[in-house]
Amino acid sequence: MTSAKQWKAGYPLVAAIVALGCALCLVVARPSTAAADDLSDLSAIQQEIQEHNADYKEAQEQVDELQAQIDENQARIDELEAELPEVREQAAASMRTLYKMQQGSGGLVDLLLSADTFYDLLSTVQYLDIIQASNTDAINELLALEDELELARVSLNSQMQEAEERREEAEDALDEAKAARDELEAKIAAQQAAEEAARKAAIEAAKKEDGKTFTTESGGSATVETPSNDNGPGSVSPGSDKDAFVSEWAPRIDAYLAGSPLSGQGKTFAEAAFEYNVDPRFSPAISMVESTQGRYCFKPHNAWGWGSSSWSSWEEAIWAHVQGLSIGYGGRLTVAGAKKYCPPNWQYWYSTVASEMSKI
Image (tube, rainbow, N blue to C red; front, side):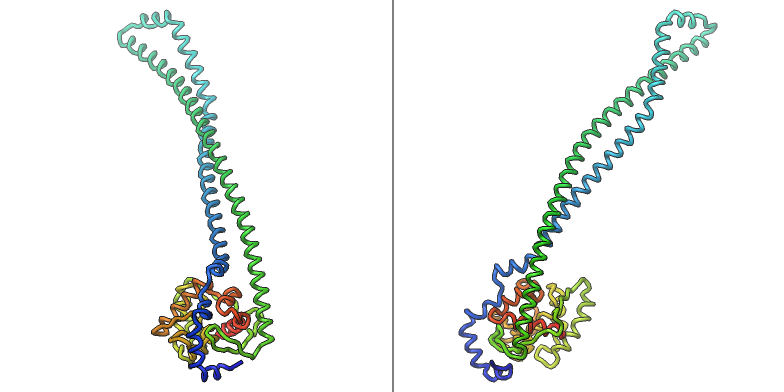
């Protein structure tokens, strides 16, 4: 195997070989549909869980709203039922009074004829009208309350039925959400376990070749490295505060790239990583593995062995590469991604990129 310096000396020959074989060798740096689907499984699973939870939340809110209406109706029914005994008694007394007045019509005539003056007669008639009106009102109030009570009961029964149907739908949605969550979480756990096992296997394989060289995706060579931490570099997410993110990672990336053609591009890497939700260390680390931080590019400004692309500036190249890592590789270093990016030597590529990320 050749070292990076030896490869630089033979660069023209390598470049010619790469140019002739790019259609067969380099296109694999772009993600295949099946592999991209595998990488998107986790995000798709999380999206399904969110949709199930949203469905259940909406159904539960509908049930709660109906239950509030039912409780309000029941409170009114309780209020009416509390009023009914008194109203019924008043209505019964009124009906007895009217009955006596009707039965005692002769007495009423005598009462009217006994009036000494016309004024007394009017007073007596008005008194009798008031009594009759009052008694009639009491009876009508009873009928109105009973009608309201019956309507409230009918409405309550209808809403109770609807509430039960909605509740059943909510329960079904919840059961489906739980079942989907359990199934998807099991799938996530299986994927994570498989990823972890493959990651450890890649690191162990790299340890056996530590210090030797391997062929990268761009056709160059890089020295096999293993992370100082067996758990690897972990993962960095941009979060929501762009200024804080860029302020933290731009100088760290600049320090890592100091003295290289990519020197001073830390802010560009950090801003692109924030924009596309990519680990900010991912692209700079790949540049080290594929081109020694842009020193030995097989295409203009292509420091990453990225297909057969070239760019007119580092800024344009960085944004394009980081976007590609987001779309085709999930924005994070994974075993599946390593198998796509550098198929022949993916274990060494994975381990070395992980080691470089740990340095940033």
